[in-house]
Picture 1 (cartoon, helix red, strand yellow):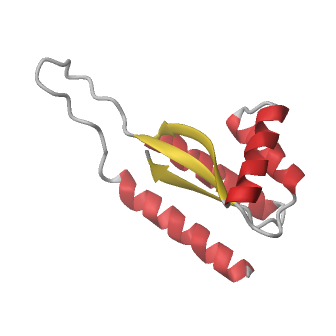
Picture 2 (cartoon, helix red, strand yellow; picture 1 turned 180 degrees about the vertical axis):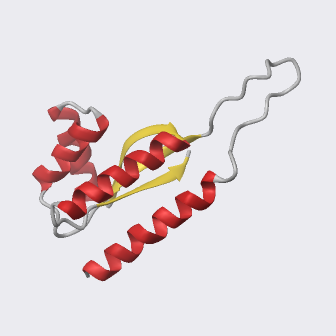
Length: 119
């Protein structure tokens, strides 16, 4: 099981580094300013059968600034629905949060997986 999780994280890291070479910005339409808005990414927490619920709550508070009540609500959503939204960020911030959460989880011996999806 740990090998599959490590492979998932390595694949996610490689995918993120591949995306870093091409910025994904929305182009403005005629009449808009030349400033482009970054494309938002959803950072998702995925359910597994091994990570303790209190660890997921801790992660949501520590890395996403959630209150105890909000973190508990998201954790329960993840538990019952398979995944839950931790936050929406520009690509670079989303990538950083995914890497931080996945490294923190592995460092504490948990298979918790965090991913990002284009919004």
